[in-house]
Length: 122
Image (cartoon, rainbow, N blue to C red):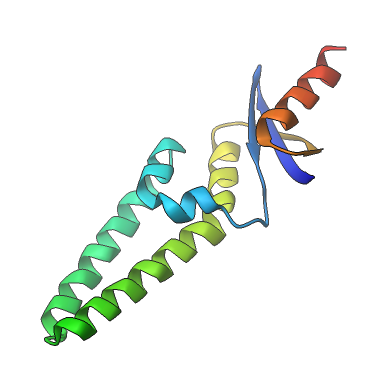
């Protein structure tokens, strides 16, 4: 069982898992960020990677070292998204006016929402 944090605004319910590594954010960095509405995070990260990519191309001439450096930067970038993704999502929900509702133990996010709705509708 996992613990999910529920946030509510009007009749909408959103789910996060604070303190947990987000594998979706790790695997699909920009796509995940855009679907979560984290446009600024995605664009800033994109610009930083472009800036770093430029310097890797200019400063490193050895093709093998170039590839290792770029893969390292990419892995670090993905880890940052994985570790901070849920925090960024929660922060964005609070900015949009969502209020923390409750923490629910469930196997999945969908089951957490169903559990909340079942108790809320009674």
